[in-house]
Length: 344
Image 1 (tube, rainbow, N blue to C red):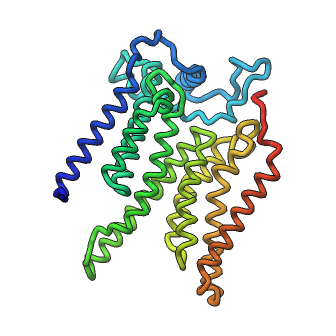
Image 2: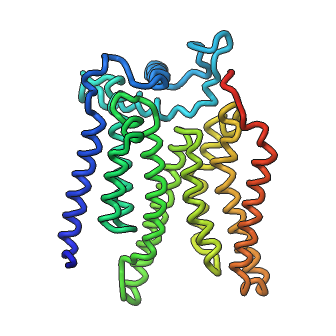
Image 3: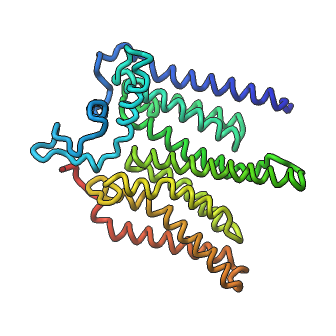
């Protein structure tokens, strides 16, 4: 029996609220037994120290002389947005809740971020695979011991923060792709059809820019955030290899420009990364630029060399294999640099 649309929306909202309360409730169990000022993971104290320095000075010092003496640690190789978020969230909320400290924010931010990320994932799965599938997957993720351990209140590390940004980046990009498949004006002609198309285009541009901005935030938070970028690129390459002509290339350019130049200019680790940041640009920035070059190359070839138009998919497949070959070649050439040490 098919439920009316309004009942379906009520059911989805009810399940979403239940899922978020369940997820958050599991992750705050026993937090009252944690000694004051302590976390359940060692790296959390590093982010706490960075948040304190940011709160005192407005920015992170260029070198960390608290450890790795006598030279200290090059903070330019870090991606410290998580600590900035803690420091400035406290500044924004302190006037409203004077008793709230940065420690309290860091104590609970992991549980909050994971809960929000799971809620977004639930809505994406409902839209793409149905309510039953979304409920099963979300409950499994909410109760999975490994996910609970690394997102529980008191963990204090950036795992849940990066998870939330990664889910948001992929979800918003997929939402953008669905806008064209669900037009706002159906069956309309003339002015109504043009208005509907214009509204859809603005929605797509906004969603594209938002997805790129979230990738920018994630790129300033985690060295391996490029893995989420690769998920988006897999969807782009699938469209690239299964379509006859290029479409929405302008949107892809907007998405790419929202994070590639910013990350390269703002963070030294993307320009001259070493140690654990040696291949940061190759993982996060190079793949989207390569895909743009491949798409642009096919567009130009199909436009200015008509005989290739009947072989558009073969051309896309060949260009894709060429791009993958470049990536494999880079891995082989740089294989000796993957075994790094943590000596600074």
